[in-house]
Image 1 (cartoon, rainbow, N blue to C red):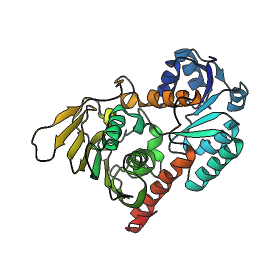
Image 2: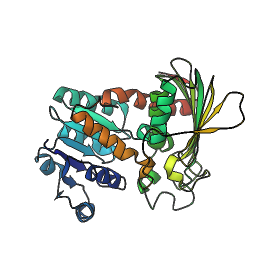
Image 3: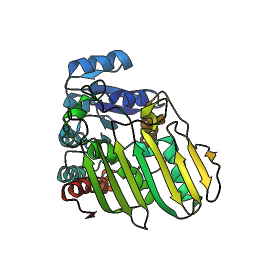
Image 4: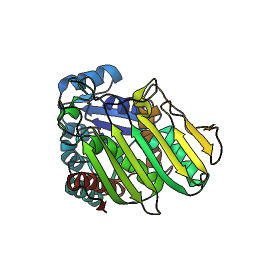
Amino acid sequence: MKPLKVAVIGLGYFSRFHLQAWAGLDGVEIIGVTDLDPSRIRWARDTFGVAGFADAADLLARAPDIVDIVAPPPAHAELVRMAVKRGRIVICQKPFCRDLAEAEAVTAAAETAGADLVIHENFRFQPWYRTLKAFLDAGSLGRVWQCRFALRPGDGRGPRAYLDRQPAFRTMPRLLIHETGVHFIDLFRWLFGEIETVYADLTRLNPVIAGEDAGVMLLTHAGGVRSEFDGNRLADHPTDNPRRTMGEMVVEGEGGAVRLDGAGRLWLRRFGERLESELPLIAPVDDSSFGGGCVAALIAHVAAAVRGQGALENRARDYLPVIRATHAAYRSAETGARVEL
């Protein structure tokens, strides 16, 4: 079988996880990378032994099968339009585009070109969430009532907040929901069904950043499940690695409760019982990478789908409701009212 030819556009902090994943996948060849910063191109070339290109057009001229866009949202629309081509898969990092109108236009352009546009939404590929999804879909908790996730990465404190890893966070006018909470909007929608209403109360705790870094978002889903995102980037949680799960979750239903801890373990407590039992994960955990190896899991999923092994998750068209819910969260925070979708 011919190797899949992959091009990577954008070499910021998170691109290392993409490059590691592609490099570790059999039957894949990274044909080149590009970035606006020549020093990043040199880094990728020296670290991964890949060819560097001065601009995206030169790289795309190499006719890749898959284009992986890891650039920031302001660059998404132009890069996606450059990359889409009939039969090609284009992966685009989240947050997808700058706003809903741009995302809708880019999605339509990809569909017109006959390309598959996939959003790199990786939290749902974390091994504990794949396990939780299978557990809930099997009916093992009975009717699900509610879910709450407490985001506590502890990385947003003080005058140097985010500078060491992702300095762009400091100037984002919208941070907590647009950049981080969007992961959980997608996750909750995937676990519990379509989102019908959104309520949010957001605030900024660290004055050195532009956007909000704490707040609560409450979603109601078709079928009645209520999911709560309780975010505070200044607080932490008990774990040896705050970025593994970035917090803790509890899902409650007729049969009891499932709890995710900071070690990436799932614990089941049946209704009426006092003790918990650990649920074995159905997917392997790579604790040397982000989110238990979720980037590699997503990328392997895309490569398998290209070869006809399974259907693609998170096509752009399917992801648009996530962006609508994100915008609704900010409308709710501005007005103090629940927003219907």
